[in-house]
Length: 344
Image 1 (cartoon, rainbow, N blue to C red):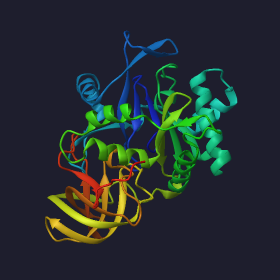
Image 2: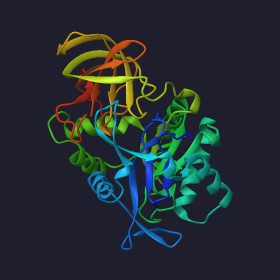
Image 3: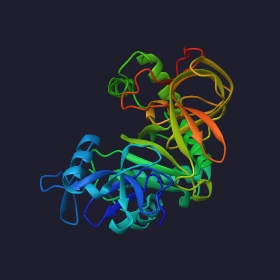
């Protein structure tokens, strides 16, 4: 039974989980609780109402009602959520949902926008329809037609880069008229929600976000271009790699490969390492578990990063810097060595 990030799992207990990993233990699929049955819920499907839950609500709900979805992870040594295989009723897949929407030819304006995005990426970037999908609330059918965003999935890291390049070309283009940049007011709200220290100024944050081209507006609706690996890009098996925390480290380096910079986690292969603060070990990559530092740097750019140092124990022993080890990511960052000043 296979599942990858952006898939949803519908369980025999009438719960909807979002898959969080490419690799899974033998007895369960790693996933995070997203929707629970609720007679007062604002979203419904097949006559059942549901509510969306945040992280704290999800853990409290499971601890109180369904503790078998929680377990102590050997690899990370923390309590995690995972759906036992015998509790899975259906795995909902974004690419299959997109196929359904194309066949249905719905008159729902939100669903029509999903098809518009898919058709555009197919026609402008030659991305196969099988390599695209729709996740988020639209995947299980628990969306709000007027207020839901579009979580658009592109399979294959190279395809994902093509999709972002296509959006960059089409946004704010009068001839196209469908795709637009996000305004500064929205980015300021995101900044105030995410940044809780002085690691990035508002101007810096906006500069980075605008150049990423992974988020935009399609006919008035916010959409994200989300990356998920194709099956043949997924390597390894659960448990073949362990991570040992070794304190914090600050490094200066050059990004050699950023193709997976929007993956989960976002990863950057790096070279020319200079240790600014911390143990002198050989760093191979920087990984980010926070959206703020996904797509933060491009190949060839010199960056400074601070995060938790981890020893990667697998077929060979290496080290990586992990950014986003706490929700607030205080004093953890990835940014260009030279502060960005060019307006976008």
